[in-house]
Image (cartoon, rainbow, N blue to C red; front, top):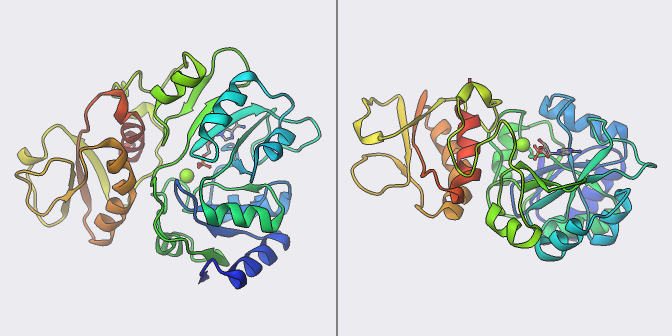
Amino acid sequence: MTIVRPDAEGYRRAVEVLRAESVVAFPTETVYGLGANAFSEKAVGEIYRLKNRPSWNPLIVHVANVEAARELAESWPVEANELAAQFWPGPLTLVLPRARHLAGVGASNNTIAVRIPDHEVALRLLEESGLALAAPSANRSEGISPTTAEHVLRSLPDVPLVLDGGPASWGIESTVIDVTGGRPRLLRPGAIPLRELRDVAGPVTLPDDGPSDGDARPSPGMSRRHYAPRATLTLVEDVRAADRDESVGVLTYETAGVEGAEILSADPREYAADLYAALHRLDDAGVTTILVQEPPRSEDWLAVRDRLGRAAAK
Ligand code: AMP
Ligand code: MG
C-alpha cells in the first residue's frame, strides 16, 4: 500500500487506479472511505473482498453535486430537496428510489444511498475521476472505522493507494435517512443529529429494532456487531467502581477519578470525533477488555450509543 499526499500527482495516481477498476481509500469529513467506481461490478466487488463485507450490506454512493445525485434517483422527493439543500455537502446520506437504468450497488434492491461529502480531497477526487464513488468505511468489516490514513493502512494493508487528508473532522459515519416514501425513516443515526433532521423534514420514524429517542437498546443481542475493537468492549454504569488490572482499558467522558483512562469530551459531537481514534489507541495498547462509561441516554448521544452498543455486541 502507498499513502500519498493529495497533490496533483496524488490525484493523478488515484484517478488512474479508479479507472482501472480498483479501489482507493480517501478522506471524508466522517471517516476514511474505501472508494470504487460505483457502477463497475469488478471495482465494487473489490470493496467487498478487501473489507470481507457481507454482500447484503449495501454501499453509499458519493457524488460531487446535486445534479449527479438526482441522476441516480428514479424520483426526487420533496424531503430530498430540502435535506440536500440544508445538509449537502455534509454527513447526511439519503436513501432514494434507484434510477431504473442503474444496477444495484452491492446489495441489489430498488433503492440507492447517496451523499455529497464535505471534504476538499473527496470532492476533488470525485471531480477529477468524473465517477460516482461507492465508499464504505475503509476498514475490515465489523472493525473500528478509520479516522486517519494510518488506521486504513493497519486495517487494510492490501489497498493499493490511500490519499492522506489528515484526521477526519466528524470522526463518525453519516446519518442515513430513507426518503423513498411516506414519513422519512432513520436507518442509521450518525453525524447529523435527529433534531436537525426534524427541523427540516418534519417527524422522522426511528428504526424498529433501534434505540428510541436515545434509549439504550433493549438488549445487546439485538445489535449486529460492528465498529468493534479487537478487545472485548463492555458498557458500564460506573467505571470507577470496576475491578481493573493492566489488561483492562477504560474509556470515559468524566474527568475525575479514573486513573490511566482515555478521557473524551462530555460534548457528544466532540466525543464522537475522538471515539474511534481512542478505541484504536486502546487496541494498540494491547488491552483485552475495554470498559466504557455509559454515555447519557439523551437523544444527542444517539449515534454514539448506537456505535458503542454494536461494538459491545458479541
Ligand atoms: P457503510 O458503507 O458501512 O457506511 O454503511 C452504509 C449503510 O448505509 C448501510 O449499512 C445501510 O444502513 C445504508 N444504506 C446504504 N445503501 C442503502 C440502501 N440502498 N437502502 C438502505 N440503506 C442503505
Ligand atoms: Mg463501516
